[in-house]
Length: 382
Image (cartoon, rainbow, N blue to C red; front, side):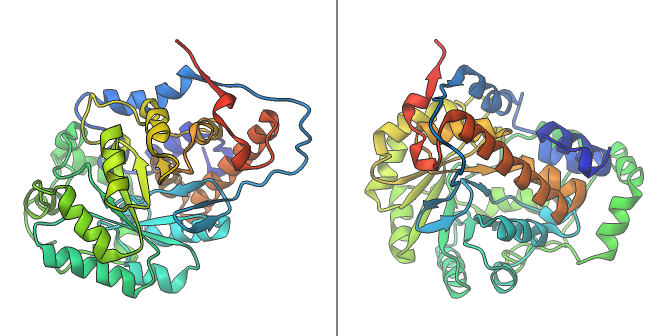
């Protein structure tokens, strides 16, 4: 199988699985505990039907939208994800390049392998910086100051990860950073020599956003230690309100699932929220993001920009979320599989396919712009 044969999410996943060592593939593919929420995230879309209108004159379709003050050409964006250099040696360079080509947002992670400064210097895109809340309050301010200095437009605080989820696939393979593999995990790396060669011969793996704060030379799982020892489980709404005020700009909370929390985000001055359960990688058994979207939009959609992610695999999924009231939809695993499959050409192909699906489905729905997608265009099964 090659890149040109990839026409949907499952094709990219299949090609990524062929090219990645098993521990790394499973790090992308896995969820928490029994992975019930991860599966439900996508299954939930099947309980919602699109209701198209015909004879609307849809020769031309405008896919552009505006979210948190940023004008983007597509209603989808590349959600911030960690450790991208593990999946392909181009890492964030590839994803940012593809996002720039398609005119959409790119999220740089605190656990990213390319610095926010390099992204800002090399790519003309609206940049989102995703970060975590640390026990060291001065470190939190220093990270925001750094983001401000390099022109980051949107701060995105992840609020559903005060501790790491129980990723049992990683426990079985021994996956950690730095690598601390089981014997079977080591054999999987040996079986994929092309990945190993590219990993060793290209830019050295690092976490530039956090390299001053994490000892990557230790024998234990540095990432696990980071979540366990550096992040602050006592984070509360006043802490976040202080950060929103300190940033004094576009500020988004990622990981909102309850209406109560969405309302609190509005009260403390956030300009956006992401309805998300972290792709099912944190609390297994939690409600799917899509099942919660309508309730949250109805409660705060007029007061704050509601974004959405988790489980998106099709253009029709995007249309359903937009019809309910999401301003934009994030994809994660989908572009990571494409990145692993072929670097920047892979990410460009997945964004191109999604663009084509959304545009085609918009025509079939009888809509010429994102703003025309309304609640009457969907109907839930009872």
